[in-house]
Length: 151
View 1: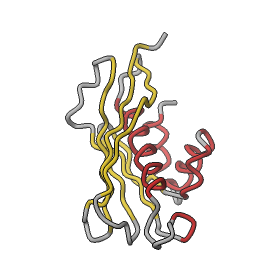
View 2: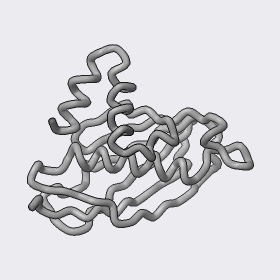
View 3: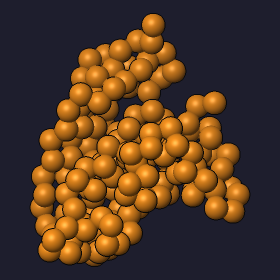
View 4: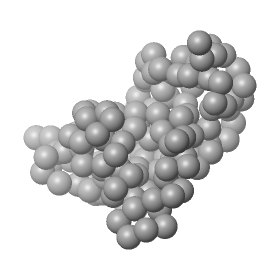
């Protein structure tokens, strides 16, 4: 079952987003470390939410930069998985990030693939923005995804 189909199936039931997030994290266990929740997934878009809790903060009590990197990779990876044609596969090959403001609240990561040509091969750059609860962009990432035909 394609990941987008699974998300659509689960979102209509109670706790469906939590169940979906758990299943994704079972497949890629490192993402459990930030205890995020996937709240939206469709072609060209994925939204991941993170509660600011002690386990994701740094010494100055803001959300740690690496927690935001994990959010970005989770959002970008799911968005590309939901958007690529079935005959293509991908793997992340790099990421550049900008830390723009202190992340002092809960956060929302959004990956937007509306400008991406999903039929190309080679490196595709997936943009991800993370905003705080005041709608301020605190973090921006560009994730390089290497895309090729499935073999």
